[in-house]
Amino acid sequence: MSENCTLTVSQSKRVLYLALWSRDLGRNLRLSPMTRGAVADSAMDRSALAELEFRTLTDQVCWNSDTLRRDAMSTNNVICMKPVRNQRSCRWRCLLAGEIFLVILFFVAIIFLLPLYLQDYSHLQRNQQQMEALRLNMSDSMEERIKRQEASHLLSNNVSSLKQNVSFLHEVLIPELRLNQTQLLQDIVRLETSYRNQTDQYGALQETYAYLKGSYYFLPKESPLLHNCNGQDSKNGYRVCPFCLHGWYFFGMSCYLLSSDPQSWEESSLWCRKEGGHLVVISSIEEQNSLQDLVNETVWIGLSDREVEGEWRWEDGSPFGSGPRFWAPGRPNNSGDDDCITLLPAAGWKDDSCIKLYTGVCEDSAGELTLPSNASLV
Image 1 (cartoon, rainbow, N blue to C red):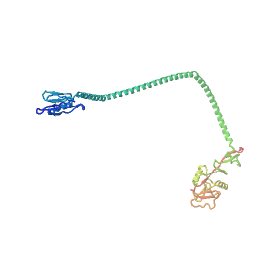
Image 2 (cartoon, rainbow, N blue to C red):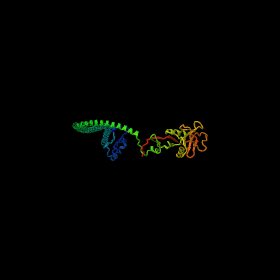
Image 3 (cartoon, rainbow, N blue to C red):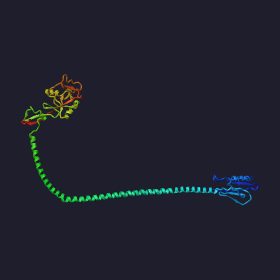
Image 4 (cartoon, rainbow, N blue to C red):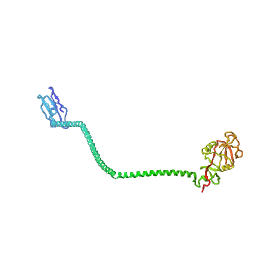
């Protein structure tokens, strides 16, 4: 940049102003005042500073960026330097300023144009995505169209096949079905007639079976019902065969069952009633001996005086005084609550507490199977 300055020379003292130009730094140095007496030595300075130009100028000197000019001519001797390379330096500064301006202008253009570019790029991306979606939709549409065409072709073939099948049904199968229907109706009539005949025959067979069932007994020789038939007397022309259910023991005309779990006397009595019998009532020495052979531990029998102390009664209600007695030695002792009777395998009867737990012996009458006297058991 240019810098202007005005210098005034006073009348009382002559002053020489010397301006130096620095080629290396490329800029103006400040003015240095020099007295007129030093002008005599300027010849040496001129030889040393060949680049300086000495001129006679006015009293006022102005330093511009380009040259030294003079105003209001006078006879005062003032020396001023003229920079030889000042114009070239100014040109470089102008170029540098222009380049800086262009760079700033470039960045300003980038700042303003970049959002527009990004916006256009975003629009372009969206347009490309939309075009890709349209392309995919068109591809899907083409595939669907091809599928519809294939389905239509297949449907057309199916319709043609169905038409052929319908024609075959009307021409071949329906007449055959009608003929089969007629034959089936005839078969139904025959079956109904046969069914009525079979029903009549079944009724006759039922009557025959009832007659045979009442007249004959078909039992295998190994049947448990026939085990006790031997040695039995005929009664009114029939043979009586006593028998017991499975698990019961037969003796005389009675059946006996041992309980599996130890219980009190009352619980044993209830269990025997559920099984269809009662606690055993011993009425003969043979029965006593048979029971002693049957059991191997103490068991309850159906004798007690729970209702009245000292009045013994059997479980089935029969009186005790008319029957035999098989007391163990020293029994009954009528001590405490010994109101119920047990059977010891080798000792006889013993009175004991009714709440003690023993197994019980149940008794029930044997069943009877009546056979004709001439029935063969072979």
